[in-house]
Image (cartoon, rainbow, N blue to C red; front, side, top):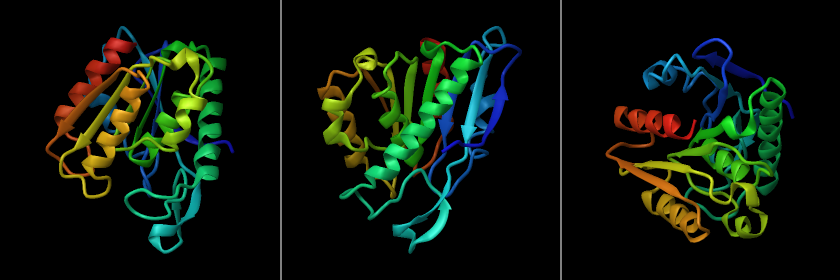
Length: 218
């Protein structure tokens, strides 16, 4: 599937790209306002790509159709929509290829995502066959975690990972996020972990930490 996306460039001729995936029921406009708040230097322009997830029925929402990267079968874990997760992974791989065709080196491409989008960012980045710049996983968890050990790609085996979570998150409990973090650490990934006193959202302190992470890896 090909995805339509909103794009913002922080300057002419960007030399890096951030592909940023929204959460369940949102759209590509959701994280658009964060770009100016990151205050990235004009001397190193970045292209932000905010794709829109396809509409699909979501089981936990009584089968209602909404923008979703994959179906969620029940709250709090359990069985996963593997076909949906892998389908979205392929769609994001296509976006990476598009950026490469536009002249952005793969090692200057960051995958980022919030909630469901963060799960797809992790799923894709850690299996991508060529080295990327890093991944940002915000208020999320590691999907298909038990398969990562066999499926992980060697070029991204030490990919910088920024993981952030709210201590009062009612949607994805902190324990689930910590379990994902620990699974990544066990596989040897360098995870930069941050906790904030917030619900299932983003806060100013987190935005500052995201900016610092991007400046370091790009």
